[in-house]
Image (cartoon, rainbow, N blue to C red; front, side, top):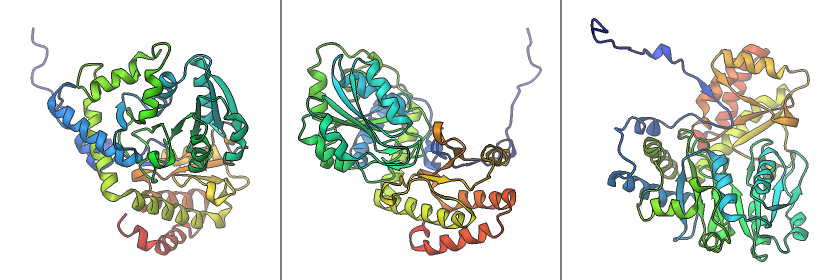
Length: 398
């Protein structure tokens, strides 16, 4: 039976995919090298070439996280939330006392996961828009098996003082788990120096790789705690032992998303070649330029303390009377995506992503031009260019 008279070919023109300006707190625009790597021909997950790529990823992750030489690094086949859950699944047992620092949505998510795995949560909190006070941990540390904290609280734009928290935890004997989703890969992270035992991020955040991978790092101390478990890890898919079987011993555990590995390798290598300190300077310069341009129009920092502002997620309080949903809808109609507040901060703030490829002048020029038109902010584009000029030494190569 003849189904087609001739071969059918669908040719997509560039106009079928309009250029989209993505300025959310994740995902971020995919790095060009990662995009190209996605088109590599498929290989089997047990192929020698894939293991070679994986070994390069592990080596570069040790550098990105600042681990000890023997630390285990790997990619989980899931987003950053899987990285969060895998840590609790492997390192928390029923009845364990776990101190969770919660000053936003993702700290609260940590607490929920700990509870689901049978842990008893000792909650340390801070008001929205404020950082965790390390001194508040002291009374909760005796007898704790773990302390968990979000380094950069995406929901509020707060940078928690992980080095100071880690200094307190070191003397307690507890493990330290750190959510580095909006910091690792854009800000220097010193896992070994600080005393972090388990860290994770998402590929689609600071590294500008496609979503679907959670890069993790596990200290030898954490692996020893895992080995001493009284019961098997309840989450088979991300059992630390099974991961080590595949990543270290090259034995089968599950099918990894090979092409995402190809893309991630290139995105991570590009970040390290740029340099983490250079990336830190780039994001800081962009944040200053954006704030300088928008402040005269009524925008202000949501996080009052400068030292506790998360550089990669610029949280700005909106001017009185601004139609949050309406403006963001109009921006989306123009192929520009920004993100508003989450939960209690909905309608109160915008959260502008400054991670990876989003933290560059070009996409924010597009946003400033659109806001000038939509809101009638005359001269906004010129003000932004003037602010960029003040940051020229940092941004000249961005």
